[in-house]
Image: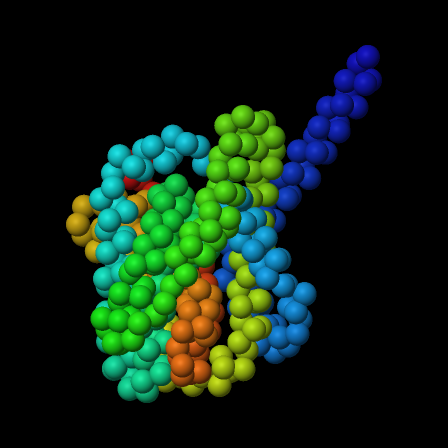
Length: 332
């Protein structure tokens, strides 16, 4: 009996050591998120056919996996707490649909972009927050429940805000498939989050066992999503000069900086400010590309969204990794 106990202890010790190695490796891999983003982007630009296998079905599944990996970290109580302070959601909504479209227009004009590129630039600024922001918020030690709520709010808001802003700023009407957006929001965002939260509530032991794998699943899903989007529009991205690359980069970078400091200076805490910064910086560029493709007559109007896919993911992941190693005070 004693020998079997000793063997069990030895097995447990070996299992613990293996898990410890995995945890360290996973943390390192998550920290290198920006590097993986660049690497996958480079492969997609160099050889777009590499990601031909990643069809629409896989694209949707990867988004769902990303949301599920975040959902298992949440509980219904997280959302209850968030809804008690709607000011955070309203602040981020105004940043998304107030500051960002204006910033996009100013940057486009400042860099002398032609009409088609300016239209595409404004479109990027006028779309909803991207789902990858939820992962970056998790990495940055932000408020994931708040991030999900903000993403959902801006996604639903896009039904009205995106066409309104494009018509107001550009004088062009951008039709938006309201039913399609609602359906996609339920399938890709709300349903996986709900499943993850349900599992967390009713099967806590199972969730606890798989929780350490959530960040890795999120990183892999995001990298594949970025690479797939880039591969589909590799030629226009390569053809875009620095005159477009720089303003698109600045849109996401300045958006993140303002998205952090404006809430911070108006009384919001560190965690909420980080969450709003990432949510503001990371736009749903793939959705912007689709709208430009379907509803803008000028082909070059879709190029800013294609460029934005790269800079959005890179900016958001860099912010996330930097904040990951900056401690948050307990009272924040």
